[in-house]
Amino acid sequence: MNRQMVSVVLAWMLMGFVCVQAQVRVTKTAGQKATIDLSGLTADPSASAQLFRKTLETDLDRSGWFVRGAPGRSEISVGGECEEGGGSVKVSCRVHEVATRSRLLGKTYRASADGARRLAHQVADEIIEAVTGQKGIFSGRLVLVGNRTGSKELYLCDSDGQGLAQLTRDRSISLAPRWSADGSIISYTSYINGFPDVYTIDVASGSRSRVASFPGLNTGGEISPNGRDMALILSKDGNPELYVMDLRSRRLTRITQTPRAAEASPSWSPDGSQIVYVSDAPGSPQLYVVSRDGGQPKRLTGRVAESVTPRWGSNGVITYSARIGGRYHVCVLNPQTLESRQITADGADYENPCWAPNGRHIACGRKTGGRSAIYLLDTMGDPPIALLDIQGNWYSPSWSAQ
Image (cartoon, rainbow, N blue to C red; front, side, top):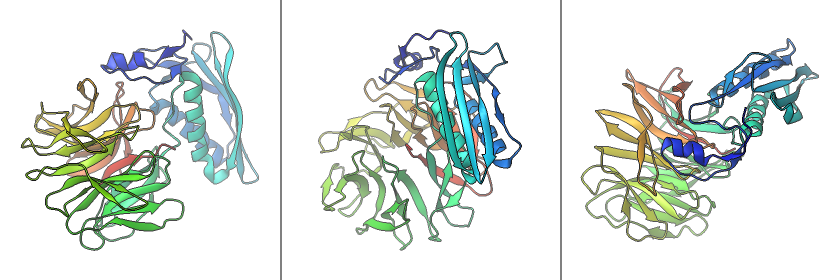
C-alpha cells in the first residue's frame, strides 16, 4: 500500500469538488478501499466483549474505507484483546500497516460493560483516523423525529441506529431538530402550545427553553457555529422571512425582504458568515445564500423543479433534497462553483439530508410504500444502508459532531 501523504482534495476532485481537508495516510481514489484483517482481535465469550467485537466490525464495514481481507494478504491488520471483568470491559487494540510493519495505533481502552457499544464506536473512529487521517462518524449521535407513539416526538440514537431513546413527550408535533456545534443543545420546532414555536433542549440536563413564540410562524431554528446566534424563520411581520437572533439579548435582525415570497430551512456556513436557505421567490422552492448580516441574496439552484431542506457541512459543501423526475433525491452542491451532483437514484423519496461529521456520509429520511426510515448515504459510492427501520415513521435526522 502506498503510504504517501496526500490531501483529501484528491478524493473531492474525483467527485467534482475541491474542498481542503487534512492529509491522509492511505492513498485511494474515490470508491477504492484498503483491505483490513480483523482476525487478530480476539474477544472473550462474555456478552459485552462479543457486542464490542460485532459493533466494531460493523462500524469499520460501514465506514467506506475498508474491505475485509485475509490474514497475510491485507494492507492493514488489527490485533488485540477484548475482555470483560468486574463489570467493565477492557480492550487492547493494535493497528499495523502490513507492508512496512509500522504501528498506526496502539492503545488500551476501558469502559463499563454496558458501555461496550459506545466504546466500540470510539475505537472504530480512532482506527479510521489512524489509518486514513479522516474523522470517523461513529462516536456521534443522531437526533430525529419519530411517530411510533402516535405523535411526532424527538428521539436520540447512536450513529448505527442502536440505543434509541425518546427525548420529548409532548404528545404533539416536533419538527426539524438541529444540534449545536458543541453537541450540547438541540433546537427544534414544536406545536405543543398549538402554534409553531422554536425551542431548545439542553441535552445533559433535559431542560427546555422557548426561544421564539411570536405571532404567526416560528420555525427553522439553527444555532450558529459560535453558539451566539440562531437563524430562524418568522412570519410576525407578514410572510415568512429569515431572521438572526442574538441568543443572549434576544435581539432580532431581519435578513430577507421578500414580501411576495416565503423563506424556509436556514443552515449556517461552517464559519458562520453565511446562511443558506429556501425561498419560493422564483415561483418554486430554490436555494439561496446570504450574508449573516443581510445584503443581496445569491441564488444557488434552479435547474430542477424544487430544491429544499439544505444543510451546510463542515466540508464546505451543501446537501439538499431536489425534486427530479417526480421523486425527491439527495444532491450535494459546491456553493463556490454551483456544481451539483445527485447522490440517490432509485425509486424512493429521500428527504431532509444532513452531513455526518466526516463530510463524506449523509443521513436522511428514505420514504417508500408510505413508510419513512433513516438511511446512511455514502457520497463516494457505497450503497445506502438502513440505520433505523423499525415500527413507525422516522424523519429529519441531525448528526452531532461528537
